[in-house]
Amino acid sequence: MIYTNYGRTGAKVSAVGFGGMRFDESKSNEENAELLLYAQSKGINYFDTAPTYCSDTSEDIFGIAMKQMRDTRDAYHVTSKGMPVEFNTADKARKAVEKSLKRLNLERIDFYHVWCIRRMDQYELAMKKGGQYQGLMKCKKEGLIGNIVISTHLPGPQIKQILAKDEFEGILLGVNVLNFPYRWEGIQAAHDAGLGVVAMNPLSGGLIPQHQDQLAFLAGPNETPTEAALRFCISAPQITVTLVGFTTREQIDTACRIADEARPFSDADIERVRTHVSENMNALCTGCGYCLKSCPQNIPIANYMQVYNEKLFLNLDDKAMLAKMKFNHDWGLLVDRCADSGYCVECGACENVCTQHLNIMERLKEIAAWENTLMCG
Image (cartoon, rainbow, N blue to C red; front, top):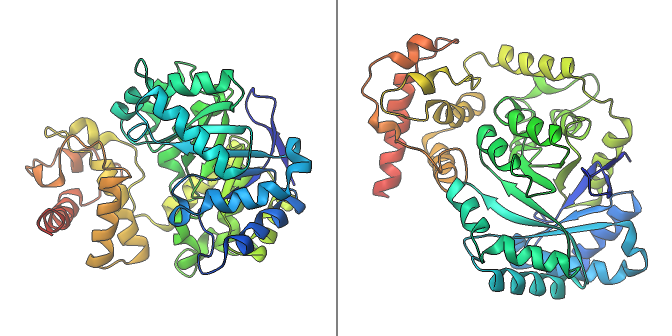
């Protein structure tokens, strides 16, 4: 197992982290807790959970395992999370920490996330006077929390804006071999700032294992696309921990083997992968962003095109795309949009500046139909 310093915190963490959001809910909590013990035996020492994961059982499963791991408490690190929209006062934030500690059977949560920041106003809510961050700072002073970190779905420029204030000791954000051209600015900014960087969704929420035939080009010699995707994140020097949502021991074995064998990706390697993705999927938007500056309606065209990318490389039907649109409206790239796709006036400015000469206006019409269905549905 590869171990790396988590930013400036002094914590030495495993390159593979245990993501507690994929337990087999048909099994008992005790059975699922055995997975954490097995993961620790394989060298994993970073365990990530949240109150609502797995129908609100994940923290309880962790608690069963943590009770059995007490003798090695200083050898591993546990995280949990709280949303500022739910815990919007210092008092509520503290109570959330206390509740998680009780469920986890711990006296200290090593990394506590200001969770699921999708818009800047949610970040501002967390940081307001008497808000969540102030409550967490008090918890840290009392030893209930080791480090305060942030979990975000914001784009790179806004991540850089937050990190410039030096309020957090690490960051959790989604990145994988397919979407990294759109996410890398935030990853690099956090790494350059000396923070711990934790990658979630390295398999694109299960999309990569489910579509290995279509994504076969991702794989190198003697590996599957899933293994290539894990290798990409695990061996990237900019990423401290790659969270994998484990369901079986075999999955743990695979991730740990990749960590043991993986050759770190250089900057040249990263650029090669970026080019490889574009060359194999030349109809995909690369997220260069030129269209954003050209649109008189302020439509976040590049964001919409990234969502549309999944239709192209997975050949998704309308039903699947409606689900994708809903997810991105609620959680993803379209949360903080200034204008909907239907605002397009077909001026053609976006297509004039598109470096790939994509049929953007035609795609926006299709997307607008999905959005109209969602609104009427």
